[in-house]
Image 1 (tube, rainbow, N blue to C red):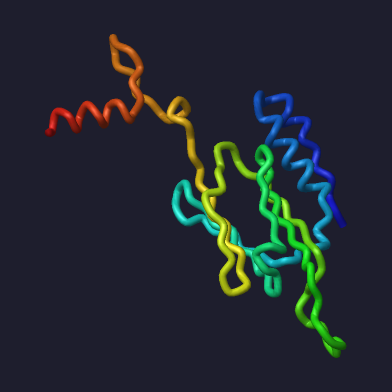
Image 2: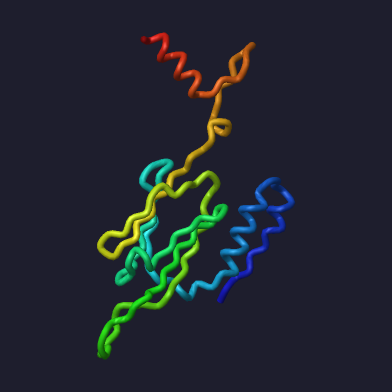
Length: 156
C-alpha cells in the first residue's frame, strides 16, 4: 500500500523549495519494481561521491552515460549474443536505463569500467560566488579565498 503525501502545508510556509517538493512528489509516484542493474552510491568526502553499477557482460561500447541538466542517465544495451544454443541464461542481458537526479553543482568527473563494474565519480563544484564569505566591519565583503591569499602573503 502506497501512502500519498500532501506537501501543501510546506508550500504555504516555505519559499524557494519548489524543486525539492517536485523531487519528493516524483519519488512518491515512481514505481519501485525494477531495480536492475544493482548499484551502490557512496559518499567519499564532503564533496566527492561515487556510483558503482554491476553491469556484468556489458562492454564499454554497449554502455552510455549522459548528463542533461541535473539528470544523470546510464543506459546499456547488448549488441551481440552468444554463439550457439543457450542451455541456461543466468547473466541478464536485457537493456536498461538508470536515472539519477543530481544536486545543484554536481559534476561527473570520470567513468570507468573494471571487472564488470561501472564506476562513476562525481564532485560537487560550488562556484566561488556561492561559497561562504566574510564581511569586514567597515569594509567590503571578501571571499574566504581572498582572505587565505592575504594571510599567505603576510606569512611569506
